[in-house]
Amino acid sequence: MRTMTLKLILTGICGLPLVCFGQRDDPCPDGPNVSNAEMSECYTKAQVGMNKLADDLVARATTNLRGTSPRDKALYGPVVLQALENAATKLEDSQVSWRSYRDQYCDAVASSYTTGSGAGTAMEECLYKTALARVRQLQLDFLGSADREEHRH
Image 1: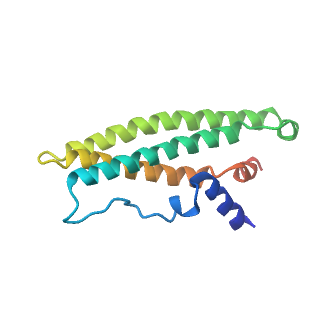
Image 2: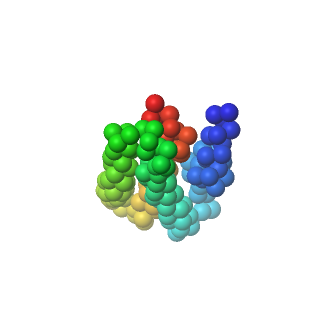
Image 3: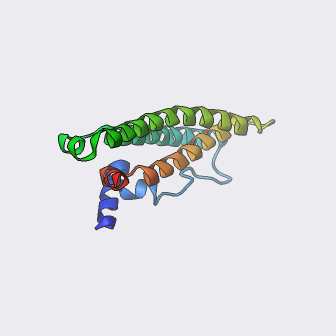
């Protein structure tokens, strides 16, 4: 039952179950026939999509944490409801901090390319891979309402 629930939740979060957990870590082609410009364009598209997914997951998780029905309010009381509100606020704050970390870290990666034209591609690749790691962590920690119910007990 839990496996089916997990599959349904991942389908809702990722669009398709394989988009997040089953995908390759590197969506962009590599090799001698791929130009730096092509790589950069590929990573730019990939990182924009993955960063949007991270933001969407945070928005969904905070909505789930804050989404209390009248039954929830009666069942769990103000202490639990305040804890869930605090979790939602901290998650939103963590996303702001994570974006700052991501940007600074990837800027350092790009700056380490002291010569040549690879800095831009390195920056975009870093933004993608950092966002992919964030998405995976959010999925593990905030899968949906079924998990929220488990945290309350």
